[in-house]
Image (cartoon, rainbow, N blue to C red):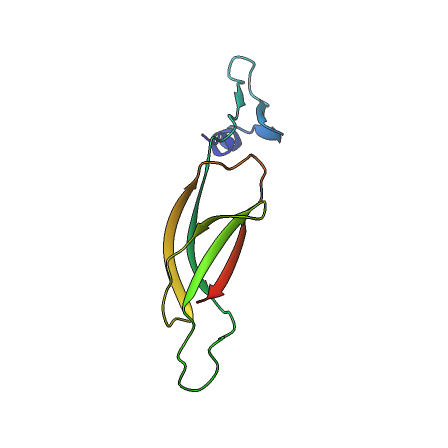
Length: 113
């Protein structure tokens, strides 16, 4: 867990250095070193979208039918369901990305069907 609140209450500090977290400022017997284990997967949630331009601006065409595509390293890793006729789409869809590599970026793109 996060030791920072506990350490702050004791007047100590905690420093992050890459993957290791070292506790500084406690008596030697209380000082511990915690190593973070690399994640085996990435879990992310696409919650919603709002404030985007209405691509269905012609009278009588309604509102956009929105969906999100998530990419990593140029490859699609997830696509949400389509939310029809909405300018404030709400998905709250969670995805476990098993092939995620530590440090890889995720790109979220919003589309109109």
